[in-house]
Structure formats: C-alpha cells, structure tokens
Amino acid sequence: MARSADFFSFLGLPRKLNLDMADLEQRYRALSRQFHPDYFYNAPAAERRASLEQSSYLNDAYRTLRDPIRRLEYLLTLEEGAAERGEGAPAKRDRGAGAPGVNKVPPALLEEVFALNEELDEVREMRAGGAPADQLKGRLERARLPIDAKRADHEAELQELSTRWDAALDRGAPDEERRAILQSLRERFLERNYIANLLAGIERELSL
Amino acid sequence: MAYSSKVIDHYENPRNVGSLPKDDVNVGTGLVGAPECGDVMKLQVKVNPDTGVIDDAKFKTFGCGSAIASSSLATEWLKGKTVDQALAIKNTEIVAELSLPPVKIHCSVLAEDAIKAAIADYKKKQAAANRAEQKQPQPTA
Image (tube, rainbow over all chains, first blue to last red; front, side, top):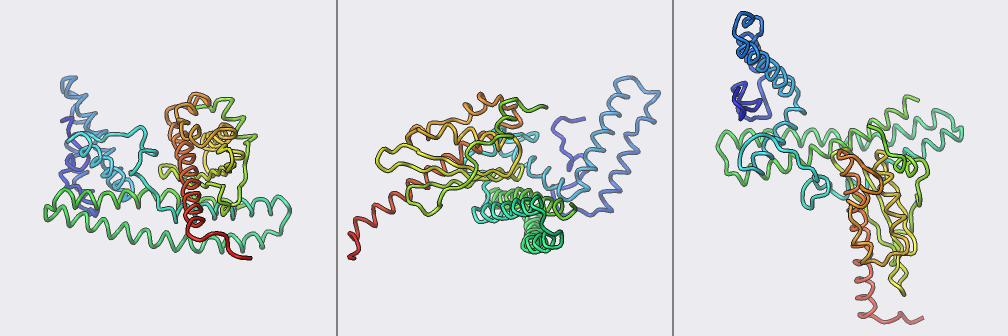
C-alpha cells in the first residue's frame, strides 16, 4: 500500500466534507471484496500480509469517513500536515494548545463557559446542602437553554463552512482561500469540545 | 496512566482557589482555554502598587486534574514574585515539578498562558489608570 495514501484517496474520493453516503458504502464494499484476506489464503506470505494491512486500513478509512465529525477531524489533520511539511501524512503538533495564534477560542465563549461551569458548581453545592430536586432541575434546564441554542447555531455554521470548503475544492480555489476556510472549520471544531463538555456536565447533574 | 502524587495533592487540596475583585486596578485577570479538551482556567494576580510584587494569586479551573494542579502550583509560585519574575515562569518548570506526562503538557502550557494573560491584563489596567490620571487630575470634591 502506498505510504502516501490517505483515507480519501484510498477510497477514490475527493477531500470533501459532504459525502454521498451510498457512494461511500459502495466503494467500501467493492474494496473490501478486493482486499479480503479470504481471497489470499493461498497466496504468498507477503501478499497475505498486504491484504490484511489493506483491509484494516480500509476499515479505518470507512469508519472515519462515515462519521461527519471524525471526517472533519481527519481532514483538518490531513491538511494541517500537508501545510506544515509541504506534503505528506498528517502531523501532530506537540505544543498545539499554547502556540500563539493557533487554536484560539473567542474570549466571549470562554467567559460563557466559565460562568456556566460556576453555575453548575453552585447547583452541586445546593444539592449537597439538601436543596429540593425540582428546584435544581429548573435551574439546570434554564442553564441549558443558551447552550442548546449555541449548539444549534454552531452546527449550522459548520454545515455552511463545509459546503464552502467543498465548493472551493470544486472550482480549484487558491490555497489562501482554502486555508481560511480550514481555519474557520478548525475553530468551530474546537469550540465543539466546550459545548459538548458543558452539555455533558448539565446532563450529568440532571441525571442525579 | 496514573497521576503523580504532587498532582493528586494539588487536586485534592488545591491552593488559592477563588477570585479577586476583577475591577480592582491592581488585579490582573487571565481567562484561557484549552480547546483540545474543553478546559477553562481563570487565574488572577493582585500586585502591590508600591513594590511591584504579587501579593496574592487566585485561580479557578474547570478541567482535568493536571490542569487544576498546574494552576494551583502556578498561584503558589506567583506569590512573592515581581511581575517580571512571574513572566519568566515556564511551562516546562511546571511539567518538571508535577512530573506531567507528555499528553498533559498542554495543561502546563495553559497555566503559563494564564499567567501571561493575567499580567498583561494588569499592565493594561495600570497603563489606562496612568493615562486617566494624567489627563484629568483629581476630581474636585
């Protein structure tokens, strides 16, 4: 298997974010048949090993591209690696979080997240102090409303950016424009972690 | 992977949790986040205007044990340091003190960023206060 391959090219797909699921599945099935280790059990050891490797790479590729968020995450790593090394496999930054200029979270979101976390802390204290459950529930439900709304906005923005990315690929937009879209996608992608954590925290409190 | 005993100690007995008055001109506030894991960290310093020494430091962190320990340790180190000494604190020193594993290095980076953000906020406030003082002297009683 060519070392330079990535999941998209392995499946013969462009690096797009909106994929036709039926088409993806069809490609996956066709390649599965092609590489299936059962067809190689009489083949020389090297070929058997290759078929196994390709099958497992194919499974990784399919699982990753099938899920919209994992697909986006993969695309971001792939493009980031290509940008950093000129070309090639995905790279991982080791000091990512702190490097200035990258992975910045809007200060307004941080403040909101901080305030909501404090609110959750208060709810925990009230619970520990024996406050009635429905009082806590009401508070949590209210705290949740703005986060739910934010998540909905967020998903819409991600969708819009994904469509723009695909369109930019289609018309061969200049690198600069593509990088700008990727940067926005990266920011939205990272903001998801905050929103997801907050919602999980609220859910956890609600389930107690 | 297990937390080091120092991380656990800071996690179970965090030093200097709380907040300082945000609008105090001698208080600097840094609010930073690690988007990779969704952590958020607030760190504040209170500087003695006469000596330039950090009298008090507080933090509040919502995140994993290493993030809490990193910021707790940072507030301990900050107290008694001058503003310039505070800016010299490096994340690698936090990593060494807490024996953080590679996957948790970003927590120490976050703490260093929080210190820098808090000091920057303090300096900004001081500069604004000085300007205001120069422009219009004391309001008449």
